Length: 111
Length: 115
Image: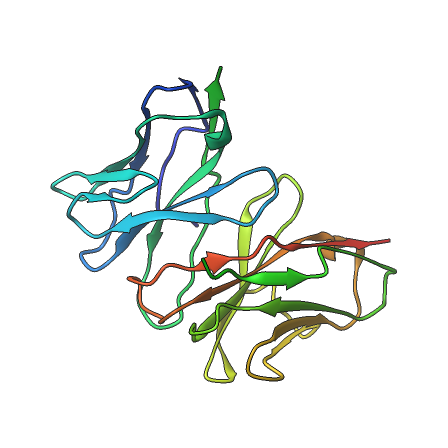
């Protein structure tokens, strides 16, 4: 089972920052936090990942608390195209380990 | 930007038939994965593949399933005798290396409908 907890749904106004929370209180010291999203029935799209430092790329920012037990994905200026299911995933181990998807947060951007 | 491509986008087959789903991973990637998503449900891991052999597989990946990298570019998932419950979206993914510092990149899937 997924090691993360996310709210099932959230709304955000277009043009505003969308802040998506995730709890991962049992995360291990060498596990990364990954964020993906899935638009309609398309393939999951990689957004960002991090270990303990905050990360930013062209899509989003990832804020990880100092104790690493929770994180927040920030979409700085949400658009209607950001409506999707967002998955927060803690990636276990190394080698060929894949990703374990939970139910995610359905983010709806309102016009 | 390089991407994972999957063919066909939609496959319809009759129960009991064999199907092969095809994927072309990103060219310099070494780890390959198959996932599936039954309509309305979570994305589920099926199998990972590295160095021409299965690295890890889930309980879903039983003897009806097999994977192969028949050449330097393709990665296939075969279902030998399809069942109605195999109807789902099947996603292929690849990553550059197998550590948790290397993200998986997914294709847009093949919708398999078993009738």
